[in-house]
Length: 503
Image (tube, rainbow, N blue to C red; front, side):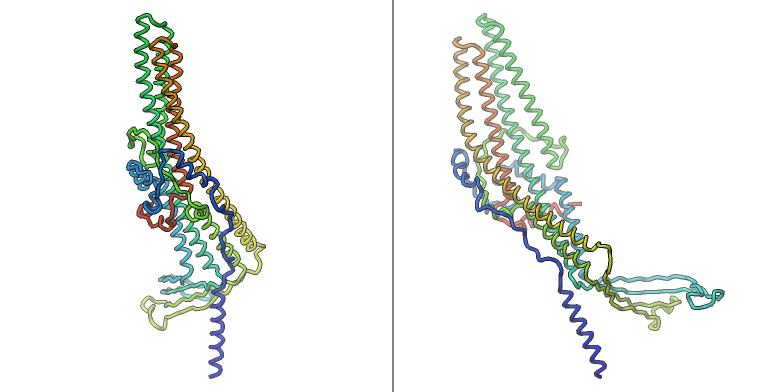
């Protein structure tokens, strides 16, 4: 009986050791790389004064009203809402990003399969004649030809002694999370691009409206000049100048129309349509009256999907260091097979025809010319690269927020100054027309005053467009949301529908 207990104790001890080793991992403990985070944005101190400077700006409270994925609703514009919905449903770049995410999820499942035994079944038949030598017979012996039928069920399992399999799974999980964040980044970029294109079109419509009014005004002025020329009050020089100014305004109006056509085509592509299938009705831009809360710099690390993607890439690279290190340690594979094998098909499943195989295989490379060490060095270098990329992504994010905060602050002051310039130019033009009709000034004064009005009005329209686009840029820079977590975006109906339709 003692002889029976000793082998059992030895087997139990070996099993315990293997289980302990299976819980070991040679992957370095992952910690997010430290980054320098300022306590507040440099431009944040000016946010309040900037919003107070522009009389038409008002405070917005979007944090609880709108879902993270629908930030554009802060502009309260039904046309923009409709365009964003169309883009999320049909944009091809977003569908490609969704397909990449599905690929990553499939690779994650492939990696997870290594945690489970692999089971397979086989059924086969062959006919052959072995050589006499293989049977231990003389070379000229007569060996009969025979049939062999087999049916087997096999299984194999790698015991994860030093964390190779678990590290591979960790890397695949991090890769999938990175692709989820990249999908959100592509989606945010698309949403911002649609809003930018929308406001650009409306800005161009505002400029087109200015030129339409200018052409009408100069047409009336030309009639007046023509009348005075016909009556002999003025020379032909004033008439030629009036015709030149009218033609110039018409030409510039066509230039704006050409730019608008290109912008409309670009928006059509964002919506997943051909330019021939999309038509945007003219709608001049009015002043956007929102204020975007930038929040704290520390929250930016959790809101920006590109930062999340860079951080997950870093985590995946860290896990792959563990995969590379595990190559220096033994690998234990347990394989087994049970089945039947016979020379006749009728006897295949007889109990006497059974066959089985069970045994572990422990392997350890002894010399590889430095290949394993090269793998570890490469994995570490990839991790160092991802750390640097993560920190650079954070720096760029802070810069983008600061840039757009500064843009909105300065644009608010600039818009107010531009409004004053427009009012003064319009007053000067009105006086010049009165004085010209009275004959106290030359037509050159009228031309100069009209040109100044058009220039100042067009500059004001462009500033309104710049403010709208800077507001969109700031929302994009802070991650497209205010308080919601990235996980909430991944669960939104729009995202789920896009991923489901991919492919």
